[in-house]
Amino acid sequence: MPLVEWNEQLSVGVPEMDQQHVKLIGMINRLHEAMRTGEAAGIQKTILGELVTYTKVHFAAEERMLDLRKYPHLAAHKLLHKYFTDKVVEMHERVVAGKMVSSVSMNTFLQDWLVKHIQHEDKKYGQYLCGVAC
Ligand SMILES: [Fe+2]
Ligand SMILES: [Fe+2]
Image (cartoon, rainbow, N blue to C red; front, top):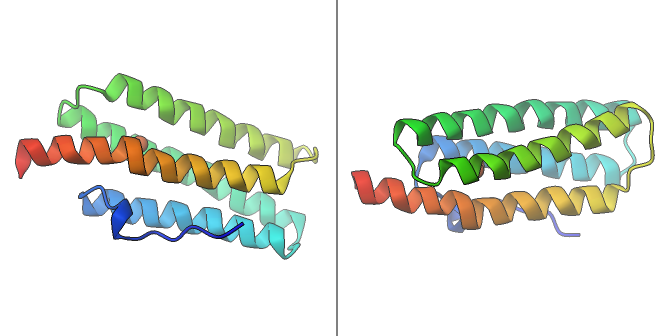
């Protein structure tokens, strides 16, 4: 499975959010790498725990910004964030509990969901914000 790299095509036009997306993608790549090379389970748990924390930080920052800018689709956007957060929290809990988690399906889900979310949903708010302020 190829690693995802952030590129200009993923830009939502808000530098702070782009930087956070770069960091999130980097964390998912780091997790993928740790699993691929069979790094210690403790390291995988730590990275996944950090991903849980940073996912919450990023979504909260995005929602705060969209609330301030009166984004009309915020409620639906929040539901998408909640879905992903719940999934990542559940994965982390399973790994912490020592349960079997398929690293391929986990990494595929994380990458696919995040990239599609940025491409399709976050870019929508980018266009909205630009329409208001550009
Ligand atoms: Fe988002
Ligand atoms: Fe985002």
